[in-house]
Image (cartoon, rainbow, N blue to C red):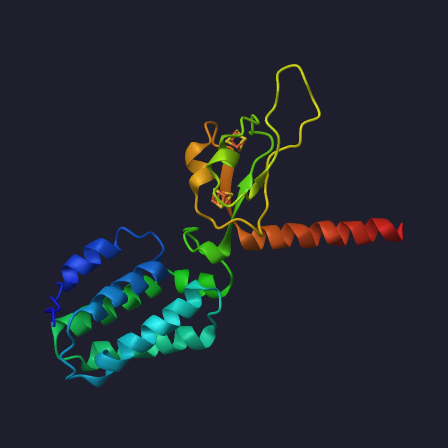
Length: 207
Ligand code: SF4
Ligand code: SF4
């Protein structure tokens, strides 16, 4: 059986710090922590880290709730208190530190403040900026972009738009757009905007 090499917590932390979203960062850290051999001497560390990873996955996938937050906090507090080694205590400390940013709570409310968690964002073409070059459509492997390339001196072309149901949020379109006409927005903002349009339409219908 190949030997599982233990990574130093400082090295895992350094790698995790490359990730902007504190929830994703915590999950990366714990996943890497769990790859290494566990001594199994302290119960909250042995079991708690698995449980924390499950709870963090819930939050990242948009299915998290207050119970997940409470469980993660309890696990980290207990690990900090009862872990006998620096490895366990460091892990608890990092989880709490990242939790204090408010990002875990923001995810429960439907937002990833860093716009890194795919489930909470949408890619959108800004019509005022789009020059209708068609490069994004060519780059999209999922045929999620519709629109027609503009031909000089002619009009009536279908504007470029992202069909959200087909979009896998790969980010390839953003990379190729020469005029920064594609933005990442909070999915919740779009829901809010649709609700406002619906309310306005209902009000107009009453007049
Ligand atoms: S993010 Fe990816 S899948 Fe979505 S429209 Fe852009 S290229 Fe296509
Ligand atoms: S690449 Fe940018 S400018 Fe070109 S069609 Fe797409 S959004 Fe518009």
